[in-house]
Length: 95
Image (cartoon, rainbow, N blue to C red; front, side, top):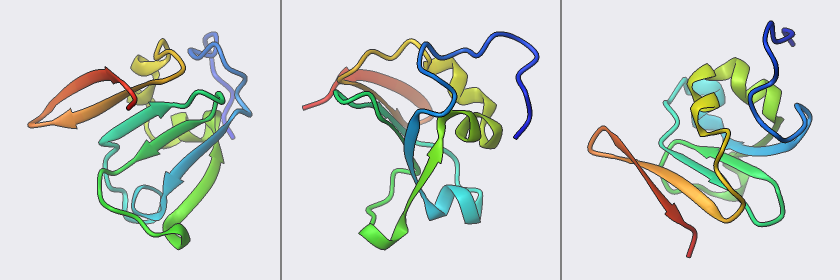
């Protein structure tokens, strides 16, 4: 894991648990859904429907190594999510 040259962009620790999918890790699919869950976990998903066996757990630091643009969502509060629709990100409270 590379060290960040600047301060870590998220208020959470770099080793914070994140859920992602095999499509992002193995197939280089872009992130289309980001969630900061009430329990503090993060989700970075491709937007497809998933089965449990497609889920992967990585650290927040690892997720940023995969896609540095995720840092622009570092201020997402617990219970909020961002979803890419028609090329634009839509922020909202989770249902």
